[in-house]
Length: 359
Image (cartoon, rainbow, N blue to C red):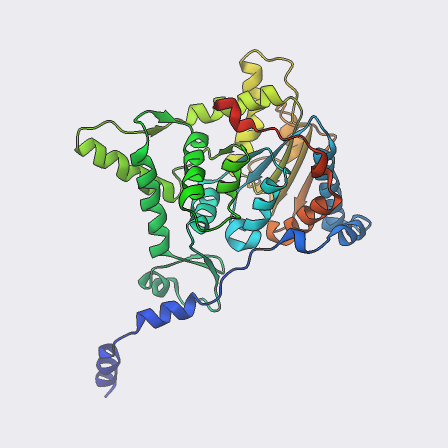
């Protein structure tokens, strides 16, 4: 009897279309920092202790960056906060001249922002079945957030199409991402895209590990197809990334870092000081301001192997104006960004337009 029941159950067709639609039914809503004023709560938190006090000081440092007319502000993003609801937050920083340079992971720029720029969405997981079931439905999971794999493959193919239009030569990730921004201006379906707004406002975006994202699949296909046809193909030049970002550091002088997470983007932006010195610019200043929001524990080296204080020993940051905030960034960045937006120091900032440096 048991075997009969098992065989009968196994023979029942599974309605995967409805099941997938059911799991992808609630879109992630990205927070709008302009819709609420976080200044009172941040001021109150600054008079508390522990992480609340740290956030208050970090927010003050970011406001000081914006108020410093000589300061170039670098936004550094690692992790999945864009997929989790901070995507429009980062876009607003670009839109309102609160950020001059972006250094991020490929996933942040391609799999999350460019993905939504093409009209796709992220979804809240209303339940989390086993991941084998998600795989059978072509649903990718980031913690409690879902992505439609079939939509993500559209990103792969779009990256391939962009690569196919370019001259066969080396490109920095900045140069290629600018082409992505241009594509969104012409074909995109979302105005509030970081990649699109960065293109329009001449804010350069660097991804030092760019192919560690959906871009990698599209670019590999581009190279393989061209190689099979005996034709030249475009390539990404990681050295150009480092050279260009270092050039910005040399030209900018005073710089401030607003870092979400750590990893390669954090080390990449900090190393520009050392690289400038190696190029003979002994007078290059360390990053004057630095804020890092992370949950990584420094005891096992997980915090990109260093706190901001430790980074000072390498000649990268100023120990006097830095703050670590040990918190999940999605829970504190809306407060920090809303506070800075409503204090309004950005209204008097000159636009840097660093992307024009490479025109």
